[in-house]
Length: 145
Image (cartoon, rainbow, N blue to C red; front, side):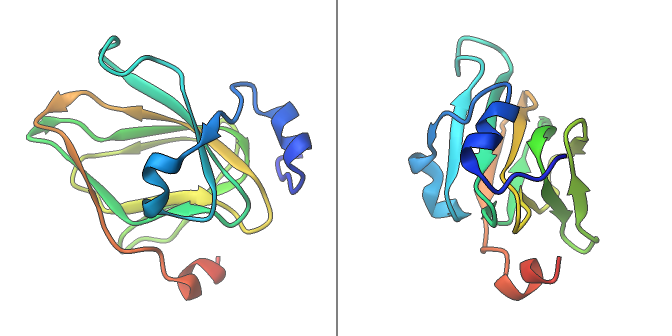
């Protein structure tokens, strides 16, 4: 079973732990997310964090910019979620799914309506990297998934 509606059951399945409320980035999420860094930013050349989404939570559309290199990897670890690139159909995410997001691709990711979801987010090193946060995912688009 990959879907979890109960937080306590989900926490048993999430090997990395959900971490603390993701308050620093809450303005870029619809719903509650949690963040648990797995490497220390600035001390490791690759930053990894376990990001957890409550059912229905998703981040806003965003773009990872880079002069060279850059982008993001998502390694799905527990629950079920969605990933979508602008202009493409949404992709169902389950544990074991790996998504490679090139730089300059507008996208969003988050939980399905009926399940908690976690993925490890990997910031791909690059030159002159930055994130651009865009508009929220429209409720009507999300609710069609």
